[in-house]
Amino acid sequence: MRAFGFLSFGHYGNFPGSRTRTSGEMLHQHIELAEGADEIGVNGAYLRVHHFARQAASPIPLLTAMAARTRRIEVGTGVIDMRYEKHVL
Image (cartoon, rainbow, N blue to C red; front, side):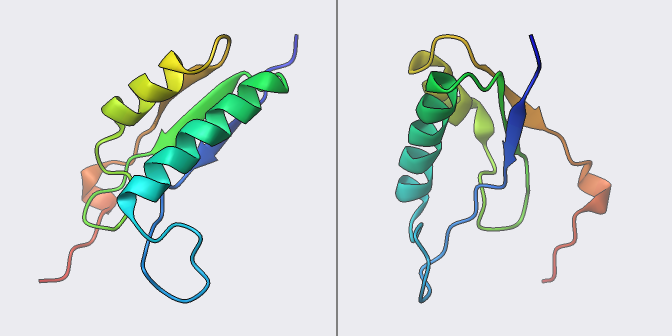
């Protein structure tokens, strides 16, 4: 069996052309994406952990929901070390 997965960045923003305007929409879309991926045989769904930006910054509850709604897919995080994050005050 081949391993095949995807990494999602979890972006959202209320700007023209955005299909994910709110964090709630982002959460629902990720769950739907994991369900669809599971149906077609994708083995892995991973979320990028990104601090200080409008992205999925607390992935564990979302990963739990994704795992609860799928049967075979592995879920996890793509880890980014905090020292590589930039925050402008």
